[in-house]
Image (cartoon, rainbow over all chains, first blue to last red; front, side):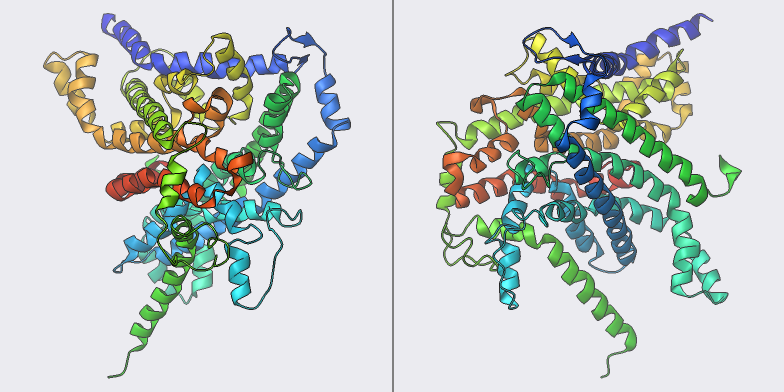
Length: 299
Length: 281
């Protein structure tokens, strides 16, 4: 009995950093931001209670807010599926034991290693600039283009989506690990039974990878909703042209740290929290229709 | 000597995968090439990877920095922030991972659940109150808001190290206990030496994340002499420095050098880390 009590003390001693950090930097901030969301607060004067005003304003009287939601949804809905599709496709291409495969794997992974950096965002703004790599390469094959892909409202968001898709490498590595775990006999048995490659993909590969797809889908969706750095760098902190790259995080940052509307920005943060929570829940709920869990034997 | 169908397939495979791979890294090569081109050449022959002359002076003009703060200062700041953060993140995460995986204390399941929830918590919800908190503590314009929280355990690393501790047989703990080791002794003498690979992986990712971190320095630091490299690069896009393209490309390239060096040395840890835990890189 004495020994068990000892376990409690030692357990809390070892877990103390996390518990402290959790209470201080997660629980307290989450609830204080809920409180701020019902106030007007500019950091200089004490917060003043305004009830649901911030939320009401957000949904009825803020055109930029509606715009940032639509931009963010477009960004998430385009970049996440494309990124996962590329990750899975290339992982299948690379799931071979031949010479040089390690080199290829590194080449495909590198962009995702550096993709979040400011250097790459700067690079991207030059690649898609009016005299950048893309226009220059188009000129070589006879297509004269002098529009800035970054400055054109119709294409600006797509440059951000391209940047995100370009970083499919880490998802690819996770898929690759999953593919290696699928026993070869499954495919052999299937081809003996006359199933072609396409059928094998849908009947073996996809179902067996589905738990990994679920995991990737959730993590990538959350991080896509939170994308900030590339939008900030490429639009010079403005979210332009015509607010076409005003991702949710960027708009929240502007409200909070350019205009010092901490209450309004906190309300935005809580809407994001609830929305992302619901999306995650929805994905989890849907998973029972498409995620395949292998034999319950060992767990 | 006819080439067999099989060999054709191999050639075709390498052609496809190789060209795609080249396309993937082409922007990076372009960045490096542009960092060595004369300023007027960067955009006139943007498609080309080969500079007409090697313009090393781009590196000098970029390194000179802004208003008396050279990139020497920015790199120094980055190294201070990154090394302290990494030490803090890895050590604290190892302690917590041990508690969660080996000590049956009251409430363990609850705290573990909390940790898994924080893994999925969007950053936007906490940055504003954290900013207010740090400003009330008088920590703005210092590295403290960037470093101190790292000493309180990082959920991804806790999870990664826990996965690793699970592979250490519990018999080892038992044997050490019989030999008179306390829980502390077991951690430092038995577990710690065995989880070094997982701690390495965590350290590498901690390095990457803090090295690339942009939003937190942007919030907490606004004096250029405190800027880390990531934030300093932004200055190339501001106002009067806008025309130093060569310098901008040179310093962007330089900011990626530590990332590449670590990747090539520790590739195995990185690939294993991502494959087993789903860490994003």
